Image (cartoon, chains in turn orange, green):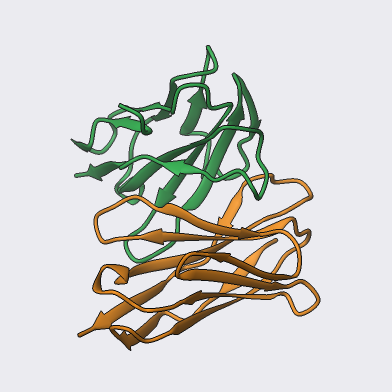
Length: 111
Length: 116
């Protein structure tokens, strides 16, 4: 089976940097993805890590350590519009070729 | 539109009735996925298709749930003899290529199903 753990809530101020961690246990592993979901909206893709290291996309970066079964999403120069839920998700390379999502981290950005 | 379209947006029905939820993926997208999402939780995998072939239905809760994608485009998720525990947001997603980490899944706005 597959399971993911991430903090339930994080609070930060505008302009700050915040890191959302994700640890996973899987029977197989293909990569770690991150999705953002605003209240009442649909999840939207942010980033993907298939190999160890850092992937940067604008203000957002994502990191993966396969040996530690760990990843994180880094959000820089926080804006109010970044207030949302953030989900890590894994794609197993055996059996199920579909995403298993974590329960999400609710980020609140305060002025 | 350019995105994944789901209908109806809201469905309220009495326990015991059958419901059919529709998903129209982004044109040309090969893979289509169904998820169920409870409030405050991440999407929970139900089933997925590559073209018209159902590749994995291991996430369907029981045999009251079924899905099809007969022509490799529009998909229907059917729930027979609905129960109150089936109440949830049902989301559809599609991806351009076959499932892979670097294949972003594009989600629809979902169907909010309420069973009375």
